[in-house]
Length: 233
Image (cartoon, rainbow, N blue to C red):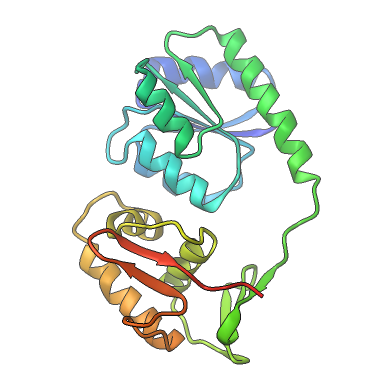
């Protein structure tokens, strides 16, 4: 098996051609028809490369690309009928590695996939990042164990609270809107859960002993969202 690919494409005719082509080449391909389904699939398994269309139901390709990039450095190739330069720039800006405009030749797509996979394999051979990070004022996050300690004592975080802390802390300085956090952590595109994000951030701050007015870890960017400002040591 060459590699495991995630294909997120709502056009069934195009998707079947791409899927069947890569399966014949020895790849394992998972096909998702919506952005939300693609995000759920990405959470469930490890992939070597992701192919994403931009015009997707439930969660568009831009949001899906952002969600994946906040969590992983896996290669992402956007495949889209939208040929405007601003779409290409936006796609690359939010973390895509390549942009292929429809219609495209399968030979070109295969060559691009193989090129990015070669780079990804070299990257995978690099030394692994530390499994924990220590911050000033006594915070330690154990990434693999999905636990956090404050001054040596484990913080009783829920699964969602740790997921919020993880996405914020692994992207320091990045401002996340409530909607982006809801999409990423709860894996849903709807905006009805914004109050849920507020409640969980409040609970997380209380457990981190992190006051809103003078924060050391989670800062509110008024009118925009939240960002992590913890200082690693």
